[in-house]
Length: 256
Image (cartoon, rainbow, N blue to C red):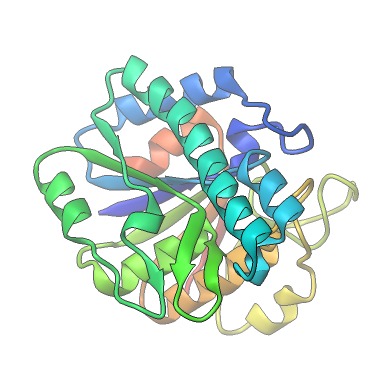
């Protein structure tokens, strides 16, 4: 079983609030359809939908007054909004996908309830989840990135063999490839170079309240230490299909 995360920058215009990239959604959905027959879960980022409202209401700081409570609801609405647009693209391609909103099975400071996802996989569905507002026993609420959801799922679900991060850029680079022409792809991160590579990382292009590439790599290193390899690669439809089919994809391998 594999988990793929479709980056928010692939399915939304990250610098234009509430602007979906519908053609790219359809292309990715078609790639997912071609990979049916393999076992996988799909997570996706929120891009310019929940990140915009989360920044406005400072939701990551918690729910401490009426304004932040209202904001948490709006952030969740925005996360579901982009999820439903992506789900429509999947359904139009004939993909038997079904949404699982993390705030219904994750509580910070509590246990994950994964039985619905496990039954869905067993019965032939493709579960789709996303970054979300979750309840927090101490702060009232918090934001969980898609990577955080993946990290927590991997710790309790059996049979997950690899994680794929389909992003706007084709892996981890020595500098921001959008701004530096001679930025070099780092093809492998492991115990021999992880410390050195972390200094290269910074937040991703556009609005991202969950931490950008640095956050991703930190999470994936922890998964690698648990024996689960991860891959960060350019989120073309061809690469998405190849990863879901267990084929090699050019990008950055994170292993330990």
